[in-house]
Length: 364
Image (tube, rainbow, N blue to C red; front, side, top):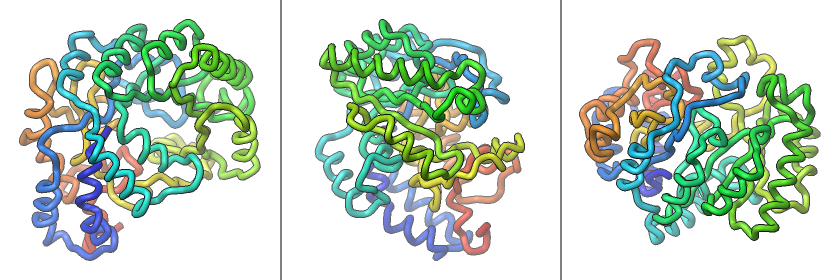
């Protein structure tokens, strides 16, 4: 979930920024304009209910860089978060849909951008640097959000499917479950996701999930994605052919963390083009939403794996106080600056641009 009104209200300003109409001398004025449009009531983009994971994915920094204590989120922590969030305002969300239909990068078929605009925008995302299907409390957590009329979504690995657990998720009224398939054979699956990955078993388990969904008459939408590692149209067509006539939402996803693949000398294997909404513009997470890690720490986005920018903890402070804190404002200011160290996470560990990259005297 994120602040769709911020997107709408800063759209014209953003077009001017990415057209290189400003210099760093105007950064304070631009920051003021962005901050003025920021909602003082925070939106929670995602809640990491667990940081346990049994995979070793080549494109995930968790595989090499994870430093936090392993844990499932405490029940009290989860409740403290949910008590402070509300569903998207229906009137404003209809306005957002009309705007995104007319102004943003939409396609006529299920796609990465459409999923972000239509689904992620209204849902609480329940994954972070962990495998959601390993969280034993996930069905109950989703039930709590369902009772508040807040839709839910999470991405997981299909090799971890257990039908009895999926049944509980259907009963909890999970909104969207995304299975990241990412491969079309066992060898490729293991290259991308590690030795525990298995294409054949994963595919069969997804078919069993679809049968279970039909039997239970569940409303949960099953989403299927494959990463565009190879920019291979034949491979993409084969992926879509797998799901023809089936009750699923399939789309091709851009490969994230190119910075990590480059560091690991894996970038040469990754030919896919990034077609996400943010590919040719700056990131807006500093103004649209927050992310909450398994211990309750509030960080700016899903890229901040180890809490490099921790603004507070939900166990100690309200989300509103954290969102409006001096440290959060400092982080927002750095989005329009180049006065940061090379280790600044938004510069060193993210593929997306920050605002200052579009200043005429800073342009990359």
